[in-house]
Amino acid sequence: MNVLLDTHALIWLFDGNTCLSSKAKSQIENVANTNFVSVVSFWEIAIKISIGKLEMDMSMEDLQKLVWENGIEILPFKIVHTFALRNLAYHHKDPFDRAILVQALAEKMHLISCDDIFDKYLTNTPIQRIW
Image (tube, rainbow, N blue to C red; front, side, top):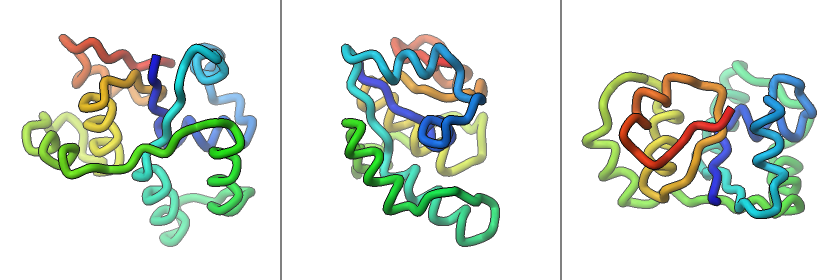
């Protein structure tokens, strides 16, 4: 199964933060799964660091290294993902979450996230939010 980690799930995974649910962690650690993180997450992290909304104990470069070392694939944001944004219901305003969501939908990946707002978008789809 392909899974896409939301930004907070990625950070919590490498911070060892107990906010990462045991179910999410077990899916990430499941060798049968292929884990992805969106390039949008790195964009979100960079912006939030630059405006003082996020502090991390590691650099973004170290985060990228951990992603690679742990076999997590980086999912690019493609033009077809922007097309999907046109028709996405407006349940949620966060542009980063909306971008990550359309990637999960377009690429048919389950989404690892604590944000239950995603459930409104995933009804009647084969995609599940794992938490």
